[in-house]
Image (cartoon, rainbow, N blue to C red):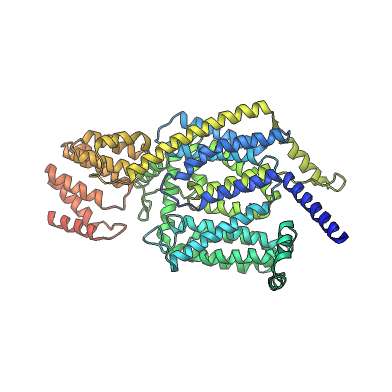
Length: 630
């Protein structure tokens, strides 16, 4: 009986201890739930422009702000503002000002998505403020979702799931293997970095230390207890290793050079001490493999370099403040038109949909000022993140490397991952060492960090939270309108499936949606409204680098018998994409209709002698037609 009393007392004592732990960490338990919910948005199907979960994120940000304010009041603590917060706020204000002043380009979607990213950062900073949540929460969640994406890709290759792109075997929840590879890359890099400093901590011991698990273990049969004892040798290191292997197996199937480069750069930096003796052999091998990958998909690499060179050609006219938000694709078209007058080889040029370099896009649209703020924000956040978690630090580094050659930051998944990690890093508080145990360097770092931290009073914080919450709610309302409009307009995207009245009704909400504008312009042309069609086409040239809009303009002018304007439009289409045969073919037909026989013959010779980027039955038919004209 005395033994039972002691046992009951011990259990009650343990229960009180567990309740005390839960009471002290209840805020971090809520924050773990926020992390899980946010990561769930990264494995939803990526759409071309808008996703439903983006609208819900904007509607959910006021709840994050309210939660952060409530936690701050309950803990009797003020909001802590860091240097990164100040830089982020300054950058965002500059972005809004650059959008408002000199708004030359349609940028509704880009503006709303940037507002969403900034408000999400603010909301998570408020919700995570002064958190002691372990970095292993983020590491474990990222590895778990990375394994899920790897499983999804495997099932698309060998299972019942279907890839989301007809030309590729696996895409995960993305639209092609390129951005999908970045998700696997981040998981591999974070896992490898975590393994470097990880201890062999048994899983079973950690599980048995939980009181409720102990109660369950007392009631299970001895046979199952024997199984538990047999797996005591399994450690967390084994689990992380298995997760890394699962993602690493699927990564080569994506054939993404940007992902391979991101992994290679991080691995070379992390494990430099192990191969330093043979560094020249390792570097030489990697350089040889890199050159081989370049020639393996040379056209794609050359096409991206043409995009970069073309935009820089346009950017030099306005270097300090950039060409304006949303004007990157127009800058590509104008830059290629300029390069076409030189001896630059443009045979690999293609229609640009993305910048394929996040820093270049920021500098071109926002100028040197915006680029400097972006670099400052990255450097400040990476400096603090390197002290808080080396695994998450290298994960962000790999994503930045990937972003210099692809477009991950144009998609919700990677913006959520990056904002989640940075917001946690800027919010976390580690237990400081005793002042007597700190080195002089650590004392200076702690002093400098304290000087860079400001506190925001409750009244100011409440007013700011209300303002940002209202802004987020309003942005969610606008995004919902865009989402619904694009859903309605995307489903029937053919000229015979919607009326002109529907087109004009949808146009304000999709003013930067080039695909819809092209179909709407063709619809107006078929109805004989040539001037209205040209107005829509000219609007589309501000948000697209596709020469098809100039072809549409030329066709409209030709039908209106304005042959001079039609000739200018066709020549502009050829200058924007000088490896396309179709603009020259249209010029040949224009000269045939206008009766300019000599120009028709000269243009027919150009059509016959030109080597297009892609040979097809259509290009062969054009050349046969030119032979007939000659």
